[in-house]
Image (cartoon, rainbow, N blue to C red; front, side, top):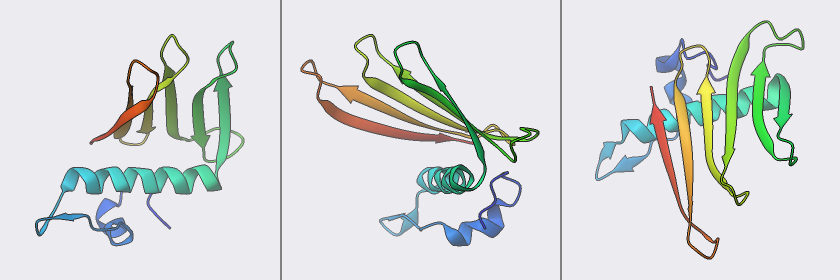
Amino acid sequence: MPDITGTNADHDRRYMPRIELMGMVDPGWQHAQEILQAWTYAYTTFYKTFTYNVGGDLTDIDVYDTAAMVTHLFHKDFTYNVGGDLIQILITRIADGDTITKDFVYNVGGDLINITVTAVP
């Protein structure tokens, strides 16, 4: 089981795919993979709450250890532009504050042209 609290990262590195660029592991990408793997495990295993804006768009997902919501594990925030396009997803691991951000860029025609992923320990 992956470490979803961020307290045993060295142990759980064996579960992460190693991304190598010119023979070197990119630590930023590796950290992003760690957070995404932990998020995926927590999301599929633990209790979730969902928040929507008045237009019906999903704005937040919170993951807790149980339905009693004692321990907050993750927060996922969705941000939209005025046209209703998704422009950012921010996942926060609550235990250590580590985040992963996905920024979405659209051209003037509204087509998605770029996605940037950033992990911050």
